[in-house]
Amino acid sequence: MSKKKKREKILVVDDEEYIRKSLKMIFEYEGYTFLQASTAEEAYRIIDETVGLDLILLDIKLPDKNGLEILKDLKRRPYSPEVIMISGHGTIQTAVEATKLGAFDFFEKPLHRERVLLGVRNALSQKKLLRKYKDLSKKAEKQYKLVGQHPLMTKLWEEILKTAPTNATVIIYGESGTGKELIARAIHEKSWRKDEEFIQVNCAAIPEELIESELFGHLKGAFTGATEKKQGKFEMADRGTIFLDEVADMSLKTQAKVLRVLEEGEVQKVGSNKVEKVDVRVIAATNKDLKKEIKDGSFREDLYFRLNVVPLYSPPLREKKDDIPLLIDYFCRLYSDENNFKLKRFTEEAVGIMKKYPWRGNVRELKNVVERLIIMTENDIIDKEQLPEHIKGDAKICFPDKSRVRTLKDFRELAEKEFILTRLEENEWNISQTARSIDTPRSNLYKKLEQYGIQIKTGVGEVVAPSKKEGEESPNSTGQDGR
Image 1 (cartoon, rainbow, N blue to C red):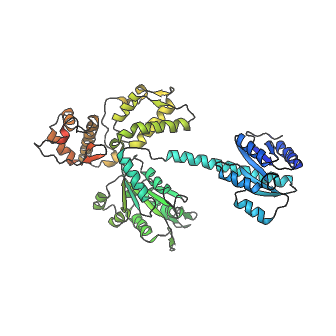
Image 2: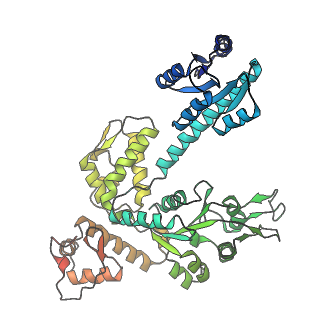
Image 3: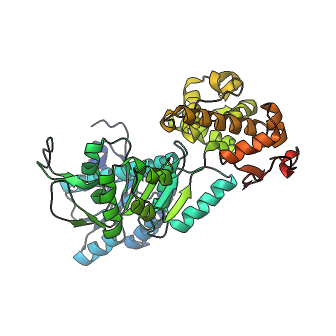
């Protein structure tokens, strides 16, 4: 008897005893677990009681019910086993009907051993592939889930649901690590293109001399190293969605070609004179100020207007800190499950410390910290003692992101802005308390807020731009209204 790591379970439903006996000998010799029934009633009982049934060989003519009716019932059930129909009076019409109802194969009597085994192996392979696909789909769904209940996230979801069913071009603005890719995937999954490809391109990660080839493809011999024809990302995304991350990092020449795709739906491979049509929805993202890039001459104004049809904002973690406990819980479940660990949790004190941390790397940084702690902490409970030193230490101000700093003035202003934001968060957006904590007059703090475009939180999900003039009282100067 051949050995198998898992003995697949096969149920044979046929009222002829010699058929069941013959198949029992064949399947048990091959190492399968064999189950049998002579009636529909008996078959239903076995199906309901058996965990992990893989395959059913089902006779069309049973004493108490037609096999095609049983097939219909089975295919209405979630995670139903594969079904192969058997008939002693088979016709092409019957076989076609069985296939339409979801049968994997159709055997005619008398049964032949090799034909039966080939069909069974193919059906079981199909079952395994479907199971793997469902498992991967579930894993992907968890990995790419947008999590949050803050009013900013509620507003974002409303905008996603309005935008998704359309063909409108979308551009997502937000800092690195805020989840712009998750927003793009959510739009794709809620659109009518969801069954087609979602192709992601990180424009900042591809060298300038290769990005055109990556986006539009090339012909063999188009340039040194082009040893064969290459399909471009826009072609791969045909009828689906392409996500151009860090779109501001494309060269002006490439931007012109992207504009052509958006306006005409046409792509042209490097080294080719032939123009090909594509049907692609474009979603772009950037962490830069495109209006400033246009003034600097590094981004095309016409492309900006073509991309900016539906602008969406991906808020940084510091603007939705109330979601941090929810995100921590989500990542705990995700990585505990992914690593086959017992569910680990953070104490309230640890979560409280993490809420005060500025999270310059946004949700990406939070996710990485939680994953590392889930893996490295032996206990099921993660307390403040297990937190990294830079998080549990006294509120430290992070240096500005190097990619955003060009001059000493840039560094000074970005550092000052982050310092003020951190102190505002620590003082729950109370202006008077924040001014005292940083030893500056309240009027000066208002000037800084206006200078850096920092909006003052006045309530749940509400913000107002500072308009305070020196010497005036402000409703935000009291402890109760300063949030």
